Length: 447
Image (cartoon, rainbow, N blue to C red; front, side, top):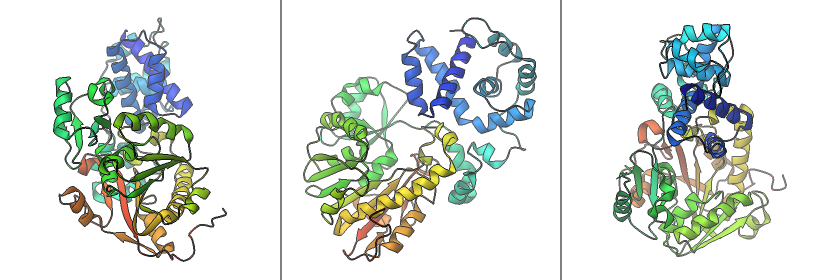
C-alpha cells in the first residue's frame, strides 16, 4: 500500500470506531478481516497510526483548533498525527492526500493551512491545559488528579503508552519455568512478572493463541494486576467460592488453579454470552470444579437461596475501566458522566446483593479496574457504613501470607497503577463478614 492508502485506511477505521463506539481492537479485527488484501506490514502501520490518534486525541484536537479553528474529525486527526507524531513534511502530506485511487481526497485550502501550521510541531505545548496534555476528558481530569495528586502527570502519561503483554501460567497443567521453556522453543521470550508468582511478561508481540502452550491450556493472557486481584481472594482447595461478575471467566480460571480443582466455584453473570464464552476456556485449562450460573439480575432469587453459604465471594465489578486505558485508549473518549454515575449505582447494588452470599468468617473481595475513588474507596466506605457486619481487612498482611513478599502499597486497600507497578490500574478491598446480622440493607431488595 502507498502511504496515502494507509492514511485513508486509518481514517476509515477511526470513523468505524467512532460510529460503533465499540472497542477499537474489535473494530480493527473486523476491518482487516473484511480486507484480507491488506498485508501484515500495512496492517501494523495502519494500526500504529490509529492508536497514535486515539492515545493523543486531545492534544491533536487542540492543535487542530489552534491551526485552523476547526474541530477534530478522523481526517483532520490523521493529518495532524502524520505531521506532528510521524514528522511528515508538507510535500509528503500533499502527495498522500491527492484524491488518487485508495488515497484521501485532495487537501482543501483550509486543510493545507492546517498542515502548514502543524509540520515541525511537537505534541506538547506550554499553553495546553492539564487535561489536554494528559489526553483525558476535561470533566474527568479532576477525579484523576485527586487520585494521584503530585504524581498525576507521570501517572496519566503512562496511561497514554502501550501496555505490556502478560500471561498467567496455569498451575493445573504446568509451572512458570516449564511454560517459559516451552514458549522459548516457539521463539517467544518472556520474563517473570515482578509481583504475580505465576505471571510471565512477553517480550515483543507474538500470535500467542497459535502457540502450543496456549492451545494446550498451559497459559492464559491476563494482566498482572488482574492475576494479583484473583490471588488476593485466597481461594483454597475445598472452599466454596462465588465469582459474582465472572464475565468470560479470566479470574474464575485463576481461582480454579489456586484451588487445584478441589472445592467448588460458581461463576455468575447476567449475560449468557459472556458465560458461554468461558466454556471453551475452562475446558482448555482442565478446570472441573466450576458451575456456571446465569442470573436474571444481581438480585436473582438464587442469591437469596444461597445466603451465607460461600467462603469467598469475588465481585469484579463493572466499572469505567480507567485503569485499562493503555489497552483501550478509545474508551476514554466515549465515557460520559452519566456512564460513571450509573456504574457507581450499579456497583453498590451488586455489592449489597453479593454480600448476602458470604458466610460468617468468609470474605467479600471487591475489585475494579478503575482509578476513580468514586468507584473504589468511596464505594467501600459506603458499603461498610450500611453493612456493620463486615470489616475491612488490611491488604498488607494478606498479601504477605499469600504471595510471600512485602506488599508494594501502603494503606488498607490495594491500589495498583501502571506508573508505579507496571500493571493495569486495579483496586482491591478485602471485607470479612463478622456476623450475619447487618442491620437494614443498603438498597431496597424490591427495587
